[in-house]
Amino acid sequence: MMKDLESLQHAEQSLMELQSRLEKAQEENRTVAVEKQNLEQKMRDEISGAKKEAHRLRELRQGAESELSRLKYAEEELVQVRVALKRAEKEMQAGWSVPEALQMWLQLTHEVEVQYYNIKKQSAELQLTVAKDEAEKIKKKRSSVFGTLHVAHSSSLDEVDHKILEAKKSLSEVTACLRERLHRWQQIEKLCGFPVVNNSGLPNLTATLYSDHSWVVMPRVSVPPYPIAGGVDDLDEDTPPIIPQFTSAASLMRPPVAQQQYVSFPPQPAGLPAPRPALPRP
Image (cartoon, rainbow, N blue to C red; front, side, top):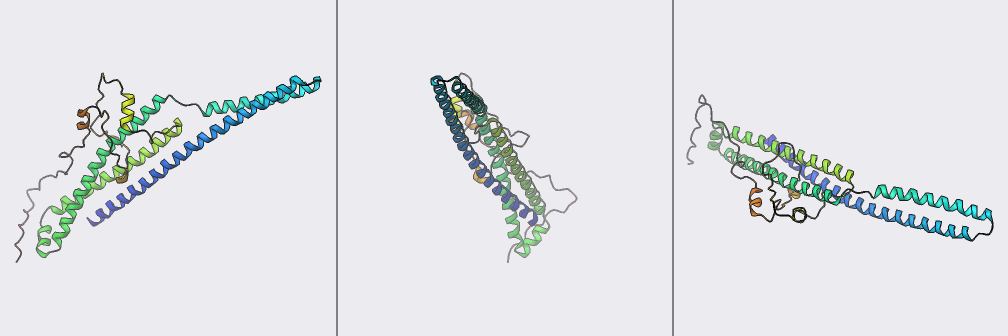
């Protein structure tokens, strides 16, 4: 049991380290976006300068007296025009962007996914808390002689071990979900060339994309079978329901309580002796 508790502590430490990596990656994304804007502005300035130089050479060519001078200026002007065209082509390729609506839909998808993760994360945290509480109770019972006898002849140890293993499994799934989401959304941002994780928030995205309230989009409430990414304690993104204008959507997004608070266990086999009652303390 103590080894399982140590494994839980290691898993919690791994989640905290992954949260730190997430914050660092988000800061790097913001820095890259600023650098990209500066580079695009620099390219536009260079293209503008090349156009001005080509215009100056054209004026000199028109004012030249000899045919040789006009030919020389024409060649220089042609070189400048080619340079400007190449830079314009690079700028067009670098400045290409997908429709703004697609960016907003991806951002909304990310925020909805975070909501589903929060449900899964709260369930794992609840299992972890229950397992720790049960382990503390067993440790307190072992501190006394009569308590040790009672624990040794009861099924409490097996139940606590089972709860610890279940909590460890849930915590590992949450960690795997976070790693998967970080990688997936980083790749999406890299391919699209715009931020997705950093957005205006679920309420603003919902108000923009669902401006027509003639129909209601109800969010899913069950956790999908595949790993859904998310964060750790510091990454708990308490986001409102998908359609905040409708109170029914908010009630559906609340995580289940009674169904996932405790882990059920099979009844004790008939062949095992019944647990002895605790003796009264003198």
